[in-house]
Amino acid sequence: MALLERVDNGAVARLTLNQPEKLNALSDAMLAALNEEFQKLKGETRIRSVVLAGSGKVFCAGHDLKEMTQGRQAEDGGKSYFADLFTRCAKVMTAIRDLPQPVIAQVHGIATAAGCQMVASCDLAVAEEGTRFGVNGVNIGLFCSTPMVALSRNVPRKHAFEMLATGDFIGAERALEIGLINRIAPHGDLQASTDTLAASIASKLGAAVKIGKRAFYSQLEMPLDAAYDHTRDVMVENMLHRDTAEGISAFIEKRPPEWNQ
Image (cartoon, rainbow, N blue to C red):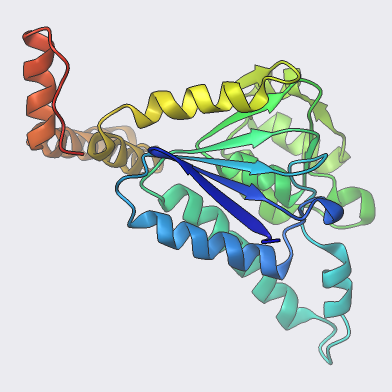
């Protein structure tokens, strides 16, 4: 069976981490599979939203610690391997942001360390009630510094640092409260809840959402005046799109738009 399974449902692509016996750990092979699929999705204009899920009992338990331990056997004690591993992981996380399609994490069981990093890297997240989240590397002597990058850009800094420094888990309710996830789904309703959100996004003009996602992350890193200048230009670009003109005309004329997306 593939480490990463993909199933398309119309304009929605569902990617499932499929190594449940290893708690869907982000092994070297899993990172490579994710990167390959994300690169494919970049050019697939028919796909307008992506769901990232995990098979088995949990979403993702982070890096594969057995592989990391094997990396220590190198002459340099694993220094080169670890640097390469964390670089490859960062590329996968930033690839999520760089995709033109919004990516929704469908989370259950646990999302720990780099698994929690992946949730934070997704544009949206839906979690099943009872799900637990943690950046718990500190419990084994490894501060989760790379997961910290995505986490600290999702939740207020004091909440992020508390999770990082204590290694404590938080539940879905707390994750919702601090902004790590968007919604909590009842047991048995996780996929349906996630699919509803994915379908809602996929029903919109793909070009507009692509423009908007790119601008959303760009403006966050700018001072206020620069952000308004940038988004002004983005709005002009969006307004001049043929399908946007059609969408506005359809709204005025009280009819469904006929988009060429």
